[in-house]
Image 1 (cartoon, rainbow, N blue to C red):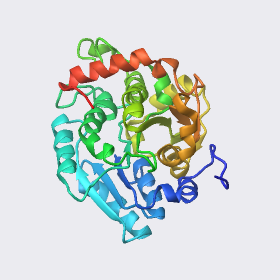
Image 2: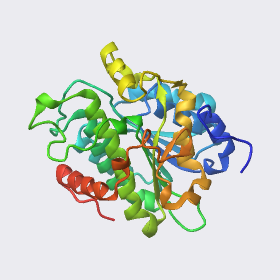
Image 3: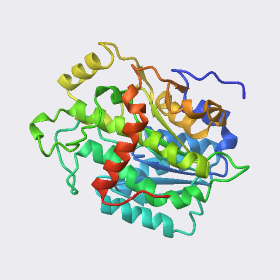
Image 4: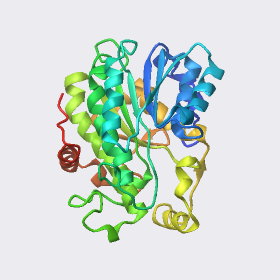
Length: 327
């Protein structure tokens, strides 16, 4: 394919227009598509290329309705389905997954985009007793992906565009790894630091991707990618204060942070979701930043790509949520 140079400045609409054949007639599920965020901008961008169905998973219709309205402003004929789910409650996630499986109008899902997250929030446990960032970004998506896998497998097949699972991570994966013996800080709550916990959650996104590929790619053709969308001002920053901002710029960007627009921010998600050229990278293609694969340790920590840690996280996740994730 020609006509686009993928990089920092690439915008989501450029990706969608370039890869419109990978959008048209297909079904996409996006978590966390509330107004002003990357999930919303991803969905609105996809609307420009005539998808068959956009499934938007969020806490309440009130939060998602502006995104639905924006999609229909682009194209009133696009089918949009809202599914209520609170990713901080595993029961809520399971109920949402059941409604998706039972919905005959959702014949299959071509691309799952696990986008929802919370960032650098004060210490809080979910209703299930898990640290909020780890639960939202990882455990909720772990359970959702497991339960709706039959709809993804219904999409996969020879001669079709590749079915994909996209896990939106961030540069935050470099801030810290998995606290194997105390992921929710329940043993030692005094050790909780917002950015360390965010690093754990974003590392989990990448390790989950590695483990998914090991299990799914050869058997089903389903491919998973993780990514850093860039630094963007979105509602994800609602917990930010001057102290937290100073800490993150010093720890991650050494005092310099080049920001993206929301359109630039969703571009890497969309390339990961759509571009058939990515398949050529084979096993080396796991993590993207600025719309390109990378293994730069300043962007993706080597431990986040470690296969043994990916297996360890898989087992820990099964233990925490109380169910096996089997094909």
